[in-house]
Amino acid sequence: MRERRFIATEEQERFFAVLTETVSSREEVISSGSVLWRAQGGCNWEDILDEAGDPIAEEPWCYKPDRMKPVEGSATDGRANPRGIL
Image 1: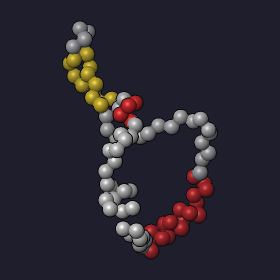
Image 2 (image 1 turned 90 degrees about the vertical axis):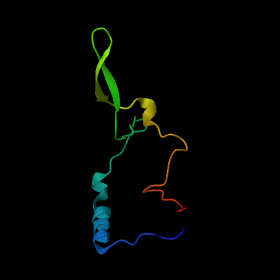
Image 3 (image 1 turned 90 degrees about the horizontal axis):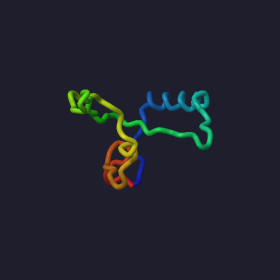
């Protein structure tokens, strides 16, 4: 639980070496105060209304701003935080 869990293959080590050598060409400075957006796959479904205001169909639409915030205490184990690893 407290030791290195992954050992890179030779191919991965070569990839990391190239990445390290070329990373500066991909750096970008973000100005203080810049607004950043959280990307998340998925969508809400919004009603398409007729002239009387009655729903006649649905279309995919982006999530509302409150949905784009992480829900406190809802993270589960996954790729970056597997169960039992400290």
